Image (cartoon, rainbow, N blue to C red; front, side, top):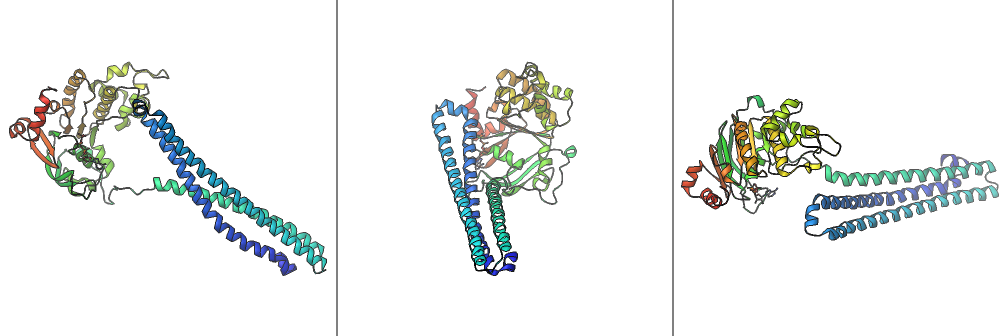
Length: 436
Ligand code: ATP
């Protein structure tokens, strides 16, 4: 514009008008492109989500003969994605067409005014010969700039969609003053004080209602309660997977909210109901909680969990055998009982001062369970243990039982609770026919 208006201000007029139109053009198209790009990215995530959901639940899909419905469900998402992409493409076509028209007008306008002024003798041919290629260069550069800006904003749309999923603030954070729980010094006293928890519900139903309880160091307690009584909730609160709403839990006098989550979980060994393994070798899975463990330590832990024999018989698709055999995604190449024994071996190796056994032997047959019970008793030696089992016979022998019912705890030994005749006695009566 400076060069053109230096020759004649009228020669710069098309460029000035073009510049105004160009800014309006960008303001109009670029946010629109960003929104459509975000939309098509969301549709893409929906397709992936539905495909992964179907595959993750493939057994349920097959068992209920719903494969064709699942196809239709995924197809619907694909159609929506295709439509979102089509909308996006249509906008890109509008964008390039509008830009081409704008640039053509600039070229035609500059050439027409240049030729007109030259015809009148007000401009020399050299200036016109400079102005037209200059307009052409501006048009080309503007095309490139707007294209790159469009692409940048498209990517901003994709990033925004991703951020909505991954940039959710952490619900549970370590406090600034949080210290590490010194595992070597943990004696294992667990003190629960006025613990109330509702999962954030405001309908008045409390999963745990003002619980008070002390588990002494080295004590082995069984946690009993009907399904949905809140046993897993209590364990999850102890592990700080949820933030306590009212009350507190202390380990050796330290509020669990004042120690780092990592050190807290390092102090607690958990064998969960449903064990899923990592897609790695058996040895790596057993050593997961104790990086740096030697092969001898891994094998010793496996022997204590009655897992050594079946591990020695393992062979994977690559020909690796024994402890080096891969277990498949989530451990699919092993049976539920074998996975559970690997989970037990993992905890044996981790050797934490507090042990949580949540239905730890539920997937084992009676013979293996009996063999493991002995090992578990050895494993429990000197540790604070909380064991959950629906088969009451497996925990009746522990030092004390905590019965959870409607958010409250009743404590006692097996005999005391039977004499009391409450919830535990009822559960025991129901089971003693079938399970003992
Ligand atoms: P089970 O023996 O069947 O495993 P449980 O005693 O371990 O049962 P919990 O899993 O602790 O029971 O569940 C206690 C109650 O809390 C149930 O009524 C359940 O619906 C509710 N609950 C569990 N998890 C959540 C959650 N993430 N959000 C909301 N409510 C939940």
